[in-house]
Image (cartoon, rainbow, N blue to C red):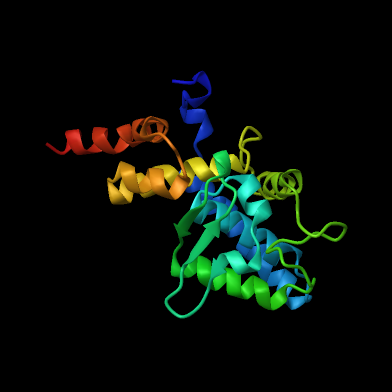
Amino acid sequence: MNPQWTMTFEKFMSETEVKALRKTLEAAVIIAKSKAHQGPVRDQCIIELALGTGLRVSEISALKLEDIDLKRGGNSLIVRHGKGDKLRQVKFSSTIKTLINDYLDYRTPDSEYLFPSQRQDHMFPTAIQKVFKKWAKKADLPARYSIHSCRHYYSVRLLSVSKNLRLVQQQLGHSSPQTTTVYAFALDEEITEAVEKL
């Protein structure tokens, strides 16, 4: 297995850290809405999308409005150019759907991309990374975290809830199940708790 896939606990945000990040964003969004500013509304949508879909930063950057199904009963998006140029469908929760709709109500630029920038037709991965770093710092999260930490968090939570490695592999767009198994070790804490209850 590629050494870069050797996961350590330092790469995973805890539930407490994610709650702090969300709380910081929620507070900023309330203020932004009262002043009709769209920045924090967009930023919250970006980070929640990362936390709730496990998309790679390049996939978030490339998302177009036509790739997202927000119709009644529709809670999914299409990744057209995933790793290896693969196409896949990713499901998301009704909470994410509400956040996307909320953001679209505030979004002013006329662009085919979900996250346009002021100078380009869409935000590049570096800009999205800066958005995450900005709010992670405000939430007092360790500097070692990046937007990719959201993908790790999503993967572990989805595996924890579903207990289905194949489902996680499909959502993440991994070509090999071996790549997905790196997230299984993060469930050791749950196993420890279960063993203690025996």
